[in-house]
Length: 447
Image (tube, rainbow, N blue to C red; front, side, top):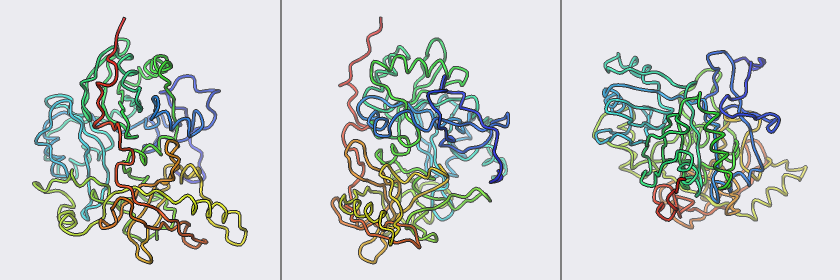
């Protein structure tokens, strides 16, 4: 799209009655491409203050819709698993119906090209989210795999609910007890007679569920969630809160925490922050993201040799940084010094209000003069009131309490060092979605 062209835009069809309550809108978090009618969707930027929205995914329940429209591939045929196994780091030899699996594609250098989620919903039926287009992948391989695949992008919705009251809200909405639904598993349900799918997963690290369904039913489902959720303190959230969920949830995201080598002319990501623009640290392997446990070397896939070498030697790993409060205040003071003109530090996070999801902020991490890693997604936690970031760092420094320094400021500006303390993942360590005892939550009672 030309930089001088203003596209025809429309408000997302998924949320009813947004005007006049919401007046500021942004593109979806996923790829912003036009719908089949030639228009481009927009979503509300915020519903309340950023801290009010963020606290909801701890204390009550947040409701997020900004991923839509999303590339959702409906695939039939078990050759799909064979295709995935020769193109991803994963294996699918034990993949029961109802299971969801984090699916990771790498380039030949072992760096993440894209990642998404694959669900097995039947004996030969699958749903795949945000992966490489299976039809395109099959074509690139010479069409050896017998699959049928359609993209449900405009006909499918995903609503994300995060927080300790999320299970109660979902159960009351679907009128079904799903206490037995395990992390990264899915089940079918109905809302007002309309079929939906419930997936237990989320971005904030806290208890969370997704509701999937037909876009024609989206208004009804959304309104139902707000109606039932009102008694539980449900809170709609916009862009800032959702972006920050990933950091607090200890979940790396492409285009938010790291770059990819594959570039579309005129559509590459913009880098900001102190990391040199030619640094290899801008690209992340599964080990950089803390996903090494998902890599299986019992099959051939792009990047296998590079990842085997990385696994066998010293490598980077994922961690968090807690930034020193005194040094943060020094940066804020220096911002107001006309002789220094230090880059402004937004207390909420390094969100690019102009370029939106197209900018990745990455800051270099040092031990003295030694570059040891890269920090991204800096944010002020509304819960802990700590300035934190997610990082990939040399393995020897991934020690709880390790002291390091982050370089603040884009190249060519007056740069400042900020002390930081390493905190091992996950940042939120209690009542996480993958291990919370849901039996401490009351089972639903239906009239």
